[in-house]
Length: 275
Image (tube, rainbow, N blue to C red):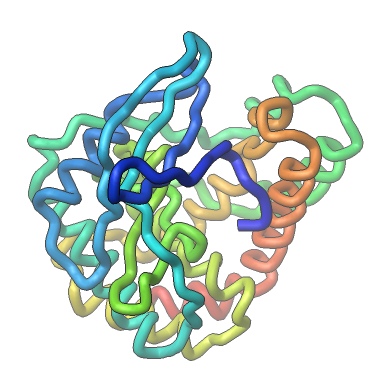
């Protein structure tokens, strides 16, 4: 991701090394921590879940979420890694579907119209964002309200998969909720395709995911639902004051770029998803 949405620190305590993320109390939902903790205890896959330790509060305005620190090593996307991640995501989705009765998360109601943009403060950035989104939105099919919804990470992206040189670890469950499974799949595809421009990796990811998924996903609507979501969602405008202008601009530019890129490459993406 181009910008940051969180404040964090790394510290030592006793013989251990830990990572702490600071989140405003107003935006904190303990269910995401509980979800991560449940997956850490129960979910088995080649993609490990970062170990959550505890929640503390040193002020009335902010909570600190403590995690075991992972010493990161640089890694590169290749066919072996994309297969591992595709299988792991399918495994994760299968697990979450099978254990829905044991997982308590907020349920996202789909926003399918452009009306939320009316609440965004008038600015040059808003005008440009709508100038990109409105023509795309007007050419899309209706959102598939019957698509499978399950407990999801909802920020399953490259920057939230880190390597310790031996294993991959999934971090940052802040946005976890019950939501449209296709948007999570498509969001990850666009995340790596946007930077790599590698069509082979896209096809391999979809192939391996499908081979390992046991869920009834309407692949016909996955791309369209993602485009609807990218058009109607106002991220990162609603976080602008909290994250600061530098992070806002980076995230804003990335969001616009990914939407344009997806729409330009929609024919290839649609054919690949149906394959």
